[in-house]
Image (cartoon, rainbow, N blue to C red; front, side, top):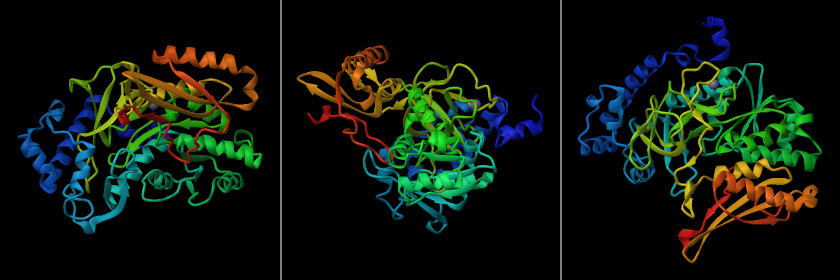
Length: 449
Ligand SMILES: [Zn+2]
């Protein structure tokens, strides 16, 4: 049994993060019932959805009953917005005057969804991030630099407030360009930062090439929290970032419509904890709809934000593909662990030549091979009736002499990890597209004919 003092040194909320599993489930069911009742009574959208399914909030008696509640798809959220009150629509559960935050999704898969939050919701956002930053070792001795264009996307906004809540000193790196950000980090001796994996790698490149600064040697960043892309849970990408910065790199997962629902802890055990104090996650078999409780079987996340009130997120089909880990995390948290983080999105995991492929598996191969740059592109097309997949990579100038062995290595590793053959194109260094924040490296052109 850990002493209270020792627990307080590890966990943001020592009580709830170490609750016995049964107690944690009880807490979740109690909160779930509360948020469903809240939505049923206040949101026209939810009431209609539930009534049409013949469901009433009182029907939830146990953990198993949760699956009876109808799911919400992202496409429904877009329809909601066409209704009153403007601009959020009829899932809004509070008077408009109580809304204090506007955010929207990036709309990469269609029209953006607008997300209202009350002040209470905003405090909840900061609280959810406080769990994850504290678990990754952020303390009041840290000076946290946030190289993020503060805007309508929620991204690292809540990370900013959570770092303050923990007591860190926060430096907002807003409209500065990359070089200015690197110089500010150096001048202030910042100890931690938050960014997408694409930006973490790009920033290190800029520092080395444009400023002659080696982040691992010349800067003092020792913790980096990633979001927005799966990279920090892909071992070879994580390794590249950790080596470039001489820092520990941690993953976290969240979404505008859901919240910050999962995080990697300081133990770095190869998975993400679900924050089960604030969220209820179920894994669903995409074909049968069966709830998956056992480890080692992939399913998609159906998730509820248990305390978010303005526009509730109840049984939302997140399309994130995950699996439960077999072993508990050595950190001692009761929160369950997802093996390897989010493995992919149900939208991105696609059948190529009849084989299921996640773009993250290809990224893992490319980033594990020395001599290749961080950039790559995957293009799937159709030749007649057959799928054709091309992987574009860049050779670093210093690896020019080992072109052939590297090519063989890429081919062998890809076949081993994805069971597929690829056309491989080696492009000149720095000729593939660069991305500032979120990268779009997977292009499926089959549907365009
Ligand atoms: Zn852990």
